[in-house]
Image (cartoon, rainbow, N blue to C red; front, top):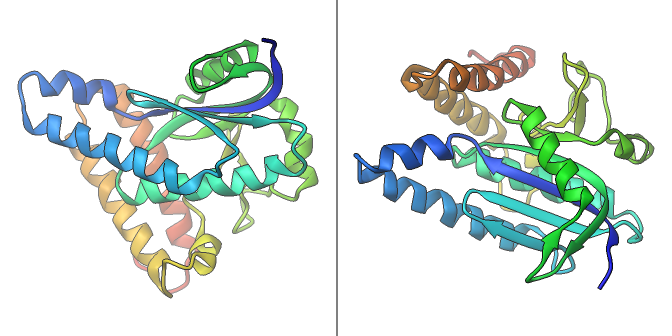
Amino acid sequence: MKYEDRVICFIDILGFKESIERSVIDEKSIDEITRVISVLEENFKSTFKEYRQVTQFSDSLAVSFLVSEKDQVFHFIIELRGFLICLADEGIFFRGGIAAGKLLHTDKLFFGPAFIKAYELEKLANYPRVIFDEKLLDQLIGHGLVGSNEESGSYVRKDCDGLYYLDYIDCEDWFEGASDYGAGTYRDYLEKFSKTIGDQLTSAMDKKVRQKYQWLANKCNQIIKKQTGWVP
């Protein structure tokens, strides 16, 4: 056995630890945890192509593919964005990192420097966003996936701290192209998104948790303000 050159995305569910802690005294939290894991499993099975290697454990998900596969970075980003949109629509948010490097990823084995890098990026992300290793930026730019913060419909954006992240909030183009959604549902998505974040900000007691949801609220409010005729 030997390492392969792979791209890996490692993501972690926001607030899962707190849900586990609550479940000890509140059995309803167990039902919510079960729902979240079920939604996660259902969506990754329907989203990621069969040639992706996928590993799910507890609240974490790792997806990888061979670097040699032509244009797979482009196609994977499209898949992952749709995955995050579907989960956000269910009130489930992620923090994650995407890296490239040496990795061994099979049905039974999962380790390597690329995983360590993706894991470190997941911690660095801090907010509910999936950020990229700088090594991947040239490919992302080459495929036209990176846009300015003022440009609508860009897949990858540069945040105020200089990190590049996958945008799953400003995504009207995705709803226009998704066969399972009809016209006007992007507005429904943003309204539901805004309400979920508002509820979380109201109920969150921990300052660090509130900061994470505030990041989402700020991004959502920026987009709503750009939509002509919409009222936040």
